[in-house]
Length: 340
Ligand code: ADP
Ligand code: MG
Image (cartoon, rainbow, N blue to C red; front, side, top):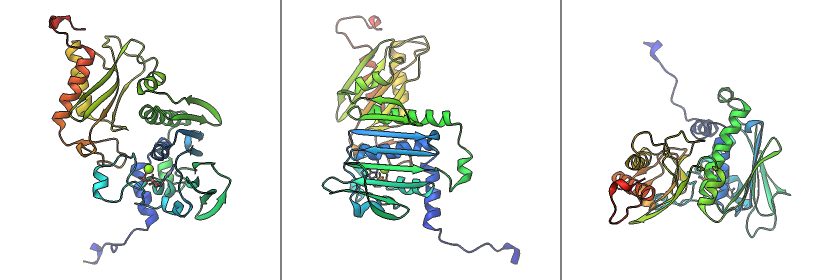
């Protein structure tokens, strides 16, 4: 019967494909900040400046002093599935950069107005790409400046989901904290509506950066973790077990430099706390797990906040033991009950 006909199958335009993909990666202004700042880290930047106006919906600008993008590659930077970070499956399985999908800039570009200025190492001057035009630029001395204006103006349905400026700003700060925790040698500066709201100096060690970012969370005392075992390493801080509710929240886990939410590790840490303090121990931690790239699959979700381990049990028992032994170092010849 004729009423049972449907429209023909059509190929979507590349713009619509990008807008659909953007829905997964670019949830709100903070997602743009995360993607841009991670690109700066991947580019080897030592100084990263972030400017956010109107909660990021009006304007986001990230400037770095990294390796830059050569003039002839600027148009490619905005193309979907175009990346300088991997070339083949082997690279993917051993990926050491935060990015590799070649999707972020294309996604951002499809839902906002993007201008890139960059001066690549060894290049005589900076170039600017804006609305498809490539022109000489007065831009950065070295590195890249990316400006994102009017986020979601092309996708008003998504724009309607945005919360207040204060809420979007809070998400931006939280995202930036995560990247900053994992990159202590990098200086991060944030401006909100033209006012500088933080300036995080580069520091020597991870522990210093953690304490600088979360002074209140760890004021009840903490131990520094550093354990290594058959290719796996766990570093960072664990708060001493406390029965009182911790001030501020601090339950951060990074796997190979990436902030992730992982049930296996979270469970292992909780278990380690329960072993030293029965009852309502409140785990406070900022931990960095490093494993061989081939042991972990980061290509699980577009935002990469989930990972899959090849051997979950091995990871669980390592994290449990590493945290447990840090909280209550085993002492020879003493009673088990002499623990914390
Ligand atoms: P991915 O990071 O997954 O490669 P992106 O869309 O985020 O994909 O970026 C595309 C490419 O643009 C990157 O592979 C990189 O070569 C280049 N690029 C983006 N941002 C920067 C930057 N701040 N400095 C240097 N190169 C950059
Ligand atoms: Mg990227």
